[in-house]
Structures are given as structure tokens and as C-alpha cells.
Amino acid sequence: MLVPRHVAIIMDGNGRWAHERALPRAAGHRAGIKPVRLCVEECSRRGVEVLTLFAFSSENWQRPPQEVGVLMQLFLEALDREVEELSSKGVALSFIGDRTALAPELKARMAGVEARTGGNRGLKLVVAIGYGGRWDIVEAARRLARACQAGELDPAAIDEERFARELALGELPDPDLFIRTGGDQRISNFLLWNLAYAEFWFTETFWPAFGSDEIGQAFAAFATRERRFGKTAAQLKADAC
Ligand code: FPP
Image (cartoon, rainbow, N blue to C red):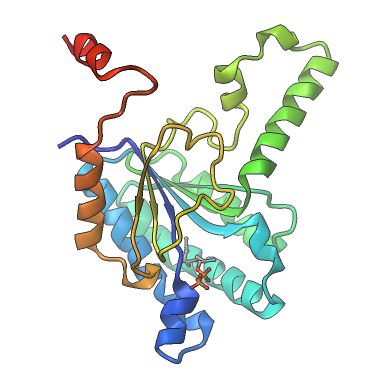
């Protein structure tokens, strides 16, 4: 079965999962840790190279301060609790997003985890915190503009490949499979550039209830997709010969 090199997930529906059970939203976020573990295990087992999870968007800063506080605390606790286990499985953990507004304690922990697991050879787990696709593109453009201004880069040398290297995912391959739980069918400012040719798979299931059977369904659906990248089906056939 054809396996995606890179899977990107919008983990949506924590609040509604909690609401259905008359629980506070925080309980939904806490329950969202289990499917994160599951996805890491399934992706590692299936030979996926990169798993990118959208944990907190640039826009999520607008949520009530209490909920933002809960999420930040959850990230901190999850890092402390899970890093040993992840590292023992060979997972290399890194983060993308604007870190400026994050608490110094969390920033320090993130940098520590990146340094500690960066050399691991297994699944690359990328967690997007404070991330926005438009922010990412603007940052890349600004860095390239500065390099041009400093005379280090010729604007004529900026092509798609050079631009992409400047984005948060850098040298990592583009996502092949994009999954969103929670019933909405949109990108919500996630990896705008990198999702250009991803295959999309949506489910109504709320993130805390997302299980290995559904991960299996998403992978099975991916394996049936014909990815033409703008070419015709006949050209693809000829390329394969
Ligand atoms: C979206 O659900 C989910 C989030 C904003 C937070 C995602 C965080 C986790 C799953 C916690 C664990 C993650 C890591 C990587 C440690 P929502 O609150 O928008 O749900 P709703 O649409 O039902 O309100």
C-alpha cells in the first residue's frame, strides 16, 4: 500500500467532544493527548517520515485567556511527560510557529526538547504552535528580502524551491495526506504553501475520539488516490514505464 511520506493533521473538535459530555472545554483538550500518541505510533509503524500536528494557531490567541492558559499548560505538561517515551521510540520532535508570545518557560522547554531529540532517526514529529500559514509566508518573504537588501541574494535566484526552503518546514517534504477531524472542511490557515498538492481526508469524528480504525481509513483512502500533479493520467502511466 502506498504510504504518505508526510501526514499533516488539524486536530479539531475537542470543545464539542467535551460539550457533548457536559465537561469543560479543558477536558476535551486533555482528552486530545491520547489520539496524538496513537497517531505517532501509527505513523511510526506505517513508515511515515513526517507527522505535523496543528496544536495552536496564530488565531487561537483570540480565545478566552483562560482557555489559552489551559492549552499552554497542557503543552508544557505534555512535553515534560511524553518526551522520554517519544525519544525512546526514536521520534525527533520540533516546533513551527511564532514563539514570541509564548511563555519563556515553554519556549525554553521546546528548545530543550528539539536539542535533545533532534538527532533521533525515527518519525519527525512537527508540532505547530502559534502557527499561521500567512505568517509563515510573510516571514519567508521578509527573510529573503533582507538577504537581497544585504546583497547576499539575487532576486532573480528566488524560485519556488528557494522560497519553500525559507518556510517553517524548511527542507521537509510537503504533506501528502492532510487529515481534519471535527466535521469542518477547510485549511484554517495551516501550511498554506505546503498543502498545495496534499490529498485531503475529512471526518466528522471529534479529535478526542479519533482512533486507529479511522487512521487506517485515511491511509487506505490515500492509497487509492491518483496524484497527477497537473499531468494527465496517460502521462503518469508513461512516466511509470
Ligand atoms: C481544536 O479543537 C483543538 C485545539 C485548538 C487544541 C489542540 C490541542 C490538543 C489536541 C492537545 C494536545 C496536543 C499536543 C500536540 C500536545 P477546538 O477547541 O477548536 O474544538 P471545537 O471546534 O469543538 O470547539
